[in-house]
Length: 249
Image 1 (cartoon, rainbow, N blue to C red):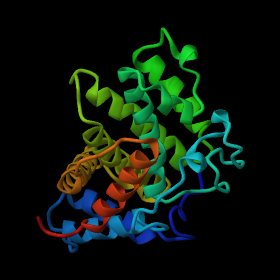
Image 2: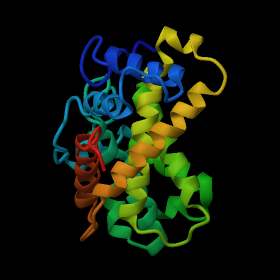
Image 3: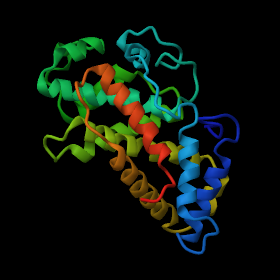
């Protein structure tokens, strides 16, 4: 996939990936690097390109299929990886579109360039997959694919929970997105062949739990959920969570 430079240039992830594999191989014990230090390195790697959570225009976040006149990457940027905060903003639009359908908020769908009548009769996974394709367009980079997988995982988590606030759903998505973006980097390292048994699964669970805890710490209320406010909320939430990585609770 050639993603070793994702989120910050050639080799930007190498030390973080090594520290994560060190942690996996030590199984959380006898490691020369404290886990909080490993997570601090991860937070810095994930936040490269946008450490504060900028406000990204909704029209620039939409995929080509939504009629935004986007570039070859489909989301208004040049081909290549985007900051995690931007990816969080993009994915949040799909979550908002789904929520808008559930409550009949048609004006939101119009802003996304969606024809409500074309979505009638679709439910569950079929509807969500359709929304991902319409709002985001095709995945043009491994990080885009990771984002789409994170969205589907988020949808599955909330499938049996009834009415969950959009802010909480976005928080779950940010957690999933941060882990899956990390997994892209881990998958490109030669060291993955040397990690035995359940070490990677154990590392995944530990990192997911840590990320989720930090995201929950900083998730606030989403007021006036317009598409732009939703995108800004997700971008700032992702950036803020990454900034508190490595800090003791």
